Length: 432
Image 1 (cartoon, rainbow, N blue to C red):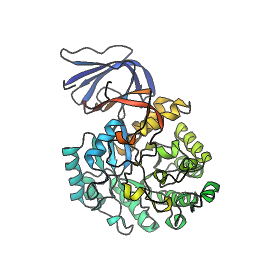
Image 2: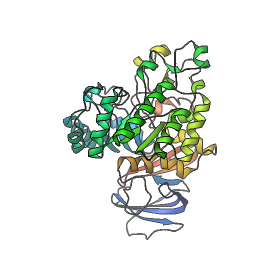
Image 3: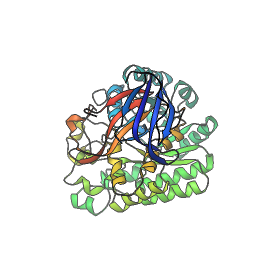
Image 4: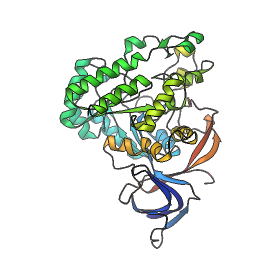
C-alpha cells in the first residue's frame, strides 16, 4: 500500500465521466492515475504493489458538496478528523464543509485555519465553503474575492436561506464578476414557521405542524428570476419535490447557469419513515410524500438533478433525544451515502455510471475540481466497493462523533472495501 505504484487488478471499472463500464485494471503512480486498462492489465512496473479487487467496482472517489462539521466551536459534534474518517469509510474523497461554525467562516483567516487543520488532521480532501453574508445574518455580503483567494470554494449561508432579494441580487452580480459559485438553501422561513415535517395527512395524524412544499418552491422561483436578472452561477443546495424539479428544469432550458442537488435522505426515504416520531428523521427540507420522492428519483435519472449530497449534519444526544417538535434538524449521511444510493441501483431505477456521476463527476465539474474521472492523469482519488455486500448499520460502528443516522439498524447493500486519496490508501475494510 505504501508503494508509489499500485495496480488494482481484476476490477469492474466504472467511469462516470464517460459512462463506460467493464472489466479492467488501474495503475496508480504517485498521486495520479497512470493508466486505465479496459479489459486488460496495464504494464506492470517493477516493484509495484498489486491488489486483486476480486471483481469489485473501481470508480472515482465521491465528492460531497454539503457537509456540516463542528470544528471550530462544536468539536463535541464533529471534528475535521472524525468527519474525514467517516468520509473515507463511505468512499467520499472530497468534502465541502459548510460555514455554519463558531466563529462563522466569513473571514480569510478562518478559511486558512480550516485548511491548515485539514492538512494536519484529515485523511480526505477538505474544501471550505465561506459564508455568503457576514455572520450568516443575510444582510451584508462577505468579501468574496479575499475569501476565494484564501481557498473558499463556494459561498453559502449553509442552513440559513438568504431571504433578502436585494442582497441575493447583489451577491449574484458580485459572484458573476468573480466567476464564483453561490449555493442557497431554498426555504421561505415565514412559511416554515413552527412546522417540523412535510405538510399533509401524515403530519395531521401525528399531530405535528407541517411545512408546505411552497416554502421551498417560492424561494426557488424567486432565485431563478434573480439569476435571470444578474446572470451569476447558482446552485440550489437541496430540492425535494416535483414542483422544484419543474422550476429548475425551466431555468436550465432558458440557458441560466443553474444547478441543483438533492439529499440522499429525500431520495431514499419519505415522510412515512418518520413512523413513531423518529427524531433522527427531522430534517430540512423535510422528508416529503412518496410522489415527490419518485419525482426527484426520475429527475436524477434524467439528469435534471445534478448532484446527490449527504447533507451530513451531526447532532448530539441533547439536541436529538427530545420530542420531535423540539429536536434539532439534521442527520448523519456521509458514511452511508453510497450504500443508501445503491438502493436505487438495485431497484433498477438508475444505472451505476449515472448514479456515480451524480456523486463524483458532476459535483467536481460544478466546483471546478479535477476529480470524478477514471482516466490517465486524473487524481488517484479512487474507491473499491462491492455493490452487493449486505450489512446492517450499527450506530456504534459509525466513525462520526455523533450517532444520529437515519439508517440506524437498517439493512443496506454495498460497502466500500478501499478508499484511495492522492494514491494513498486511507481506508481498508476489515477482511477486504
